[in-house]
Length: 252
Ligand code: PGA
Image 1 (tube, rainbow, N blue to C red):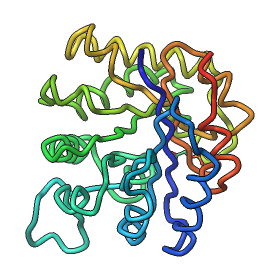
Image 2: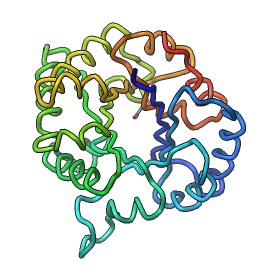
Image 3: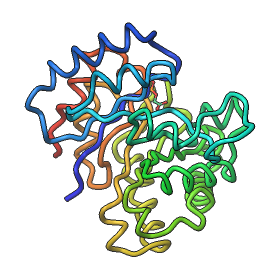
Image 4: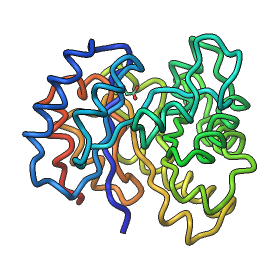
């Protein structure tokens, strides 16, 4: 049985003080809650202070990006070694905003995924089609290309720890959620790809999240789908009440 995983992607929001206040309230809200794995992804600037506050608790810490190199002359970058050092267990890789605005490609995503895994940092790998691609009937081809390129050469044992986030670009920050059926269709397809690339047994343990306008009022029906193992939440993760409600989803 895959344990659901709900991650809050704060994007470029929250100062250090705001981040600390948020996780302090979240810890209180979720006291005793064990059924869902919970992850928060603050900005780089807040990671160290949030890690300190989360130490010893159940909420895990993620970064929103990582470099593929361990150290060196890469101005502005942060390495997997540094993320582990500061207390991250997860890192989001290949988010559509990075692909659209910062030149992230499947090739760089692949290098980052391998670097993260080799440093015991679990990647949350984002894939998903644009509206235009969906309207042209290209969804499956696009997602297949991303999954195969992003995971090229990834060792099967390490792959066990990764999370895939299916995030249709047209659903991110738009209030337009994919219907549970649309999300399930693509996510079951992704599980099939993982089964071919690794093994059926491994595909059964890898968690696949849905992301794109997840809110307290649509999480239940999304999570009732057999191949939706959690959510990557943007806007609704910025407020403790709505994020805590999403975390407390009962798997259907
Ligand atoms: P959203 O963002 O929930 O605000 O649509 C999701 C994401 O970008 O991960």
